[in-house]
Image 1 (cartoon, rainbow, N blue to C red):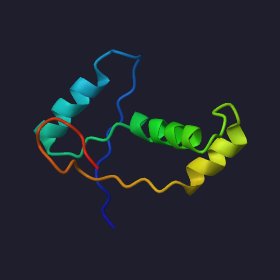
Image 2: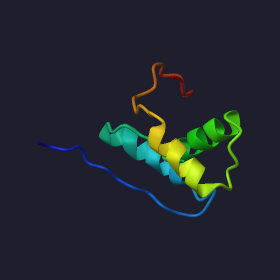
Image 3: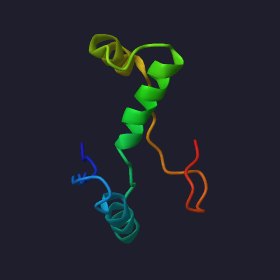
Image 4: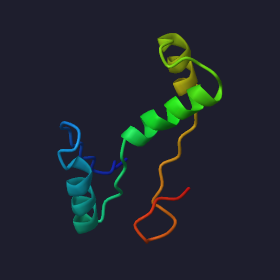
Length: 82
């Protein structure tokens, strides 16, 4: 089975990671996925369910149960949907 190429970009906040990742994804026709979105989704769900984000066991359990689908945006206007 052939797996897609995965490129991880790491760096400090506001260092241009998202900018360069978007440019590379466009140039190489890759799917850009900001993993920070997953962390924010888990945090949002924890807050929505009144789970303290400081309770590592409950947040970890929640993260294990959340289904996150990764797909290209449904519109091509620079905003993200879905």
